[in-house]
Each structure stands twice: as C-alpha cells, then as structure tokens.
Length: 202
Length: 202
Image 1 (cartoon, rainbow over the protein chains, first blue to last red):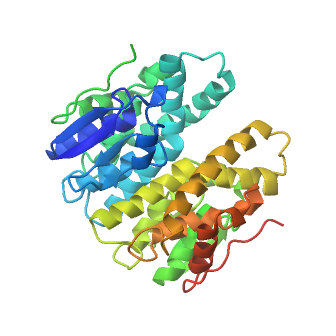
Image 2: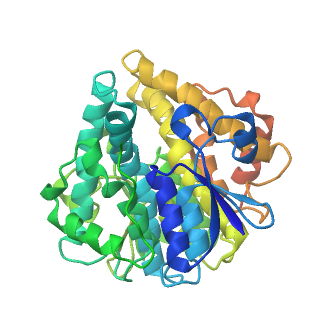
C-alpha cells in the first residue's frame, strides 16, 4: 500500500489523489497542514528536505516528491499518459507550464485571499498574481475554446494537473465566467471516473 | 532541421543547446533577447503565446515550448533519459524542482544582479532569492556530496537542467565554494561530450 502525505485543500495534493483514483491505485492518506508548519517538522523534512507537500511513500519505503512527477509516475502505461512522442511532450509542456506560469499565481492568490486572508498585507503580490494568472488562463482558453482537453490525446494528467487550482481560481479573485472554454472543461474534468471536486475554502 | 529560438546568456536556453549537442541533434539557432522584449513581439507571441524562451520549431513546423519538456523530448530513447520506472521519476522530480524551487531564485538573482544591474531596486526580491536559493543548493548538495550525478542513472537531462543556472549562481551572489559537492559536479557536467559552459555576464 502507498501512503500520500497531503493537505486536503491543496490543489497539488488533490491532483495526486485524483490520478490515483483514475488509475485504480489504492492509497492511504495522511493529513499534513502545510499552512501551520506541518511540512517543516524534523520528521517531515527527513522525508522531503524541500518541506513541500504532497509526498508519496511507496510500498518499499521509497519517497516520491513533486506533484507532477508523482502524476507521471502513476499514469505511466495508462491512458492518462501518452506513449513517448509529441503527444507526451505536449503533456509535459502543460505540466511545466502549470508549475512555472500558473500555480505560482492562481494558487498563491487563492491562498492569500481565502486561506491566509491577508490581501491587504500582500497587495503587491496579489497584483502580480492577477496579471500573470490572467495570462495563464488566457493561454489555456486558446486551447480549450475549441478542444475538449489540453492535448489531442483525450484526458491526461495535464488536465488533472491544470484543473487542480483552476477549478478554485474564483477563490483567488479570478471570475471564471470570463473563460467559457475553461469553464466547460472544468465540468468535463470533474466528470471523469473517480474524480471529486477540490474542497472549497471554509 | 530544427530551429531553437533562444537567448545565449539564458540557462533555460543553454540547457536545450547542450542536450541537443549530447544526443547529436543538429539545430539552427535564432537569437532572441528576452531582456529587451524580443520574446513579446506579435511574431514571437504567435509562436509561443506565453512569451517565453526557449522555443523549438521542429522540421514539420510544430512548436515545442518549456525548456524541460524540450529536454525530455529530445532525450527520449537515449542514455540521458532513463526508461519508465523509478529512475525516470527521479529525473522528473529534479526537473520540476528546477522550475519551481531553483530557477525562480538562482536565475532571478543572477538576472537582477548581473544583467538588469538593479539590486537596490529589488532588495526585497533578492533577499527572498537568497533564502530560497540557498535552500535549493543545500538540497542538491545532500545528493551530490556522495554521488556523481543527481540520479543513480548516470548523467541525465536532470543534471543538464540543474547545472544550467547553478554554474552561474555566483553571478547571483551565491558563493559556490560553500557547496563542494555541487562544485565538483559542475566540473563533471561541463566535461560531458559537446557541453560548453554558459556565457558569463559581460
């Protein structure tokens, strides 16, 4: 049995659970609230020195970190990861786009507004998030206005990775109705077998 | 023939050239100075709406973006990308670590100090870069103090990706002598066949 160490409201952790559900991989879940320092304890840092969730511990005790690497690991050989070739490369492009150009703005804005609830103290950071997050959503909309999924392979880990925080972008101040292709795609992603929506902020 | 659109002093572009050299893939290089807006022209945005370099145009005109996706694309089936399994996952862990936990601090500090030359105007950002960049180098040192390469597969695209900006970390104010395992590994990376050092700031 594998164990996922994750924080339920985190999109990075949510995406791991959904891909495990999609590929039929059973797992145990250990809750780690990274917003109160639980991913920075000596015990956690011994497991992942980068102090980040999610972390997966395999049956033999090996530790796998980085949410999108975990997705690729468990999707290998399934319909959710294309075989080597340009379609796989398209999936990887979206996974790197997610971590560099999307998550640092969409997820951070959500955390500041709806979890930390410190928008005034982070006004400058939030302004950056709004500009760069809007650009990220515009880029996704270009594809999703005319396609069901982010790549032409059908649903892949790229869709699960990007929908993680996109479904909750409104909690970061982004009005999803402005991106109709994205809005329809979110519904498609959440209708995949075993996928459940991300928990809303309280 | 493929075409790389890149900026010579950029580590993200450097890594693409080095992997193409390593795997024996000929390419044409088109210089794009992203520091003066050349990756934000209408022509460039038509190629990559995210306005980022590097971009590779394949022989059939298809465009591939995201430096680490480009690395994985061209290394597939070579010694620089392990076959599917835990070693490949280790490579992907390092590639995502590079884009999320390393490049935004090591590369950004170098750009502010040695290219934009605006350290005073960016004092707060630089202070964040110093803390997070030091953490990233410490994590690499844990592995490289006792191993020749970042994974147990021998040299892979993970090493090329991480060494891109690490070799120039001193230009961002990081004293590499503090990380002796990293320093030895940089020499090993730069001795790989066809690999040439990143251009220094003027």
